[in-house]
Image (spheres, each protein chain N blue to C red):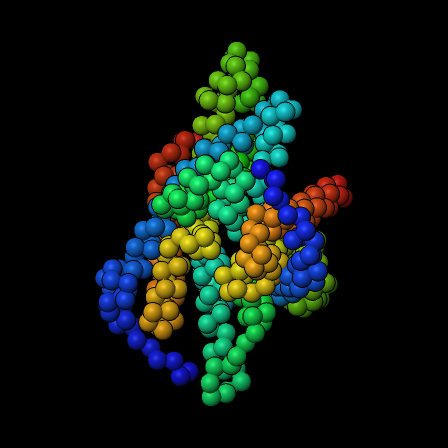
Length: 230
Length: 243
């Protein structure tokens, strides 16, 4: 079964896999998580603001993003982002956008819909007495949110946010459809160049598995600690 | 925006000779739905079994369930599909591998099984959550009545669990439909792939993707409405099973 298993192909491509591929994957995951949480929190706030129209638009955005496959959304933005760039910069032809920028925009906007739902649940889980007390102290709406509600919502939802980040980490592998060399893309390139599909894909699977396992174990520890404090 | 819109492109004949571009997208939609339903059946069966396994008093049982769920949850779906499609035929005995490679429709079977097993881990988690959310008295009462463990699950715990699980299962089924698009990477010509093909043949990028978006939304709406009827039909009076 593993008689002609070639470990050397993995060793030879390690630096390419991790320095190029994994760096891309992790950078994309990190930035998209950050952008997604910021944008998602804004969406959640707008949705809970009590303005009917704002809530409606945000609800539509979240529902739309959540009912589309990520692969389709990746293609959408891949073709759309150059036109958005053209519109933003006012240039005469679609702007050339790099693979990284395009996928960063995609993942930020797509994951924002998921983060928005998490943050909404977090904000709603704060008891009504908290914002009421903040108001009684004379804090403005934005102060109430910034100093009272959001820090608690964020803290309560931290395990869920991190779990979503692990999902996001796994989802970034889908940039494969744009032939972008993320970790899996890099592994696949080497696999096809050297005709070593078995070794490279198994190795990629082990790496993804190890990282996700360690991360979700960490989240579970964190969850236990937070649950204990409550 | 200097993009040339042409919405009538859907009624133009597609170069692959199967009719219009609209026919092309619709045949992709059919394949998406077929794959999703096959995957969903696998996910439900394996998910229910593993979910039950995790709640059993047996230590080995719950450990096997735990390992199964972690295995399928901690790898991207794309990587899992690659393992099934590219790696499995190579590491099996030669004749089996050859049979798998020569199988017509291999992407379809791989996608149905791969996505099914991937989703089964999620269904298992929902099953476990459903069973543990039942009041402890149910299991105790069943034991007091002299039911065996198997009977307790069959007649007391599972009928309630599956009803409680319907709303989360609906969203898992929607994920299954969405996940079929990942199979584009192993050559399954489902809706997203047909959309890509249409875009490459006709250069009408945004029309193609808009149509696919609308089709996915329609499928979502139909599933949500259908599941609402199922929930209402199965609801037990006196219990609030889902909203």
